Length: 313
Length: 276
Image 1 (cartoon, helix red, strand yellow):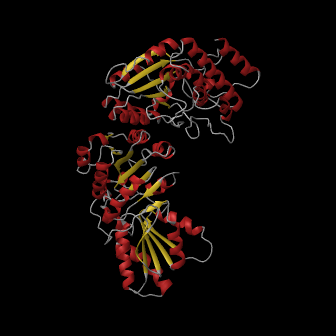
Image 2: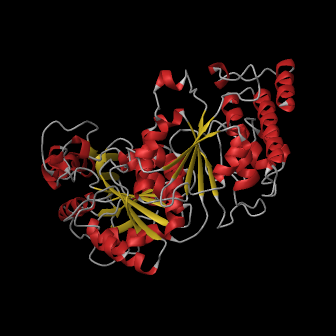
Image 3: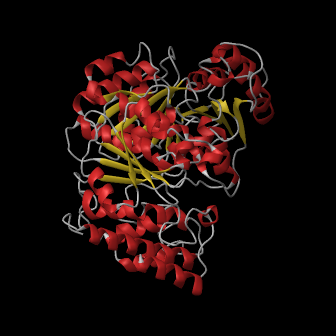
């Protein structure tokens, strides 16, 4: 995803001199081409994230569209107040990019696990929160974010995420992409969980269920209409995210459904348990411990489906 | 005010900024009168003779940028912006009042001429640094002034920006430290010692000048001869007196928080300022 992002940003910077990249001394083997091609649009702020965001805001208030780039929580939580007061309150054109959303830096340590970032940044006024589902969405999101006037949080995976879309989808911030139509259950995924959700949807379809699959790449503003349709047109809604089940995509969908009047489908949030990981593991390993691999997700969904749809096996 | 203002004009402006601040803070019963009074001469000199701004065009692309990072000095900042013509003086009555737009910490929203909202310390300099970097890269001659408090120098975010600005040679960036020697709970020396402050900035690669922060002529000449050293950002350490202009407030921690009581106490304070 980060490759798709930086490639798209590079192209945008070719034709739009307002587009700048400010990195927090991270991005080895990723940002060099941008830095070499666009030296006047590139800054390495050093290991100083508060200044990185402040700097980006000052540049944005002087006419630039500024992407900050760091990994995990460094570019978000370390400088959260700068993001709130300086970027969001001033509606600055600052696009905070984090690579390694979720457990992508799994075995590097809990410090590197970005598991609450969406919940926290989603709470900020004026903020748009985007977590693309695959490299194609990452490219399209980068373009959309440049065109967006105001602050944004772009949460990316790292490297090697599979391409899920078979054709280039219409990508609009705040509008879910339907990858699969269906009338029995809905899977709503954000970020890298889109690929898992796609596989799970295939399994469920194999059992005779009609599965709707939505990529909810924009978590704020949430596509409430798509959520309401899912909860009224299908009989069960699942959210899938590589983020704490508290306050992220699942939380956002739960907020909508809690206030939805009338009969509607129940919701099951599938995500990270809200706790610090206690054993070492790479992304794949830790995801399996949280039940976020294909098998784990099926295990969560299976009994619910069996109860609701009287399916066996 | 024309940039040809005399030193006496600037002193008169500073007196008005103090009087406005006393009235605003007393009526609204808010804190930080001491911080406003220590900053008054600096703001008067900046608005009266240094800043290239146009109150008719607050968003003018080539304006100098002034960021009041010590956002608690809000009353005096609004007074300076109003005296400069960015908004009518009667809007000062909105200060910290229900339904108004002039919050008790410096706020940009709905307040023309205020570049940036502040209130949490240590935010102004990084933003000013980004502005200065942009001006440099685009070869524009506008400058960025950031007004900071001494207590604010405790914030690590400033030192991140201080390192950055020197590395990038941002000699269009100017900080003025209102060094009144008192922070929130106690004297700076008894809280987190800053001395030797000028040496710190020199060691970080900044041009430094120490100046009497109430000496209009000295401030004017320092702020009129920028950059202090070509290729280096500018740190002006303005030695000030907290509560300056009202004898019984000067140098007292108490007046970081206590507002002058309306009536006799306010009248005595105003009389002292007007006689100064």
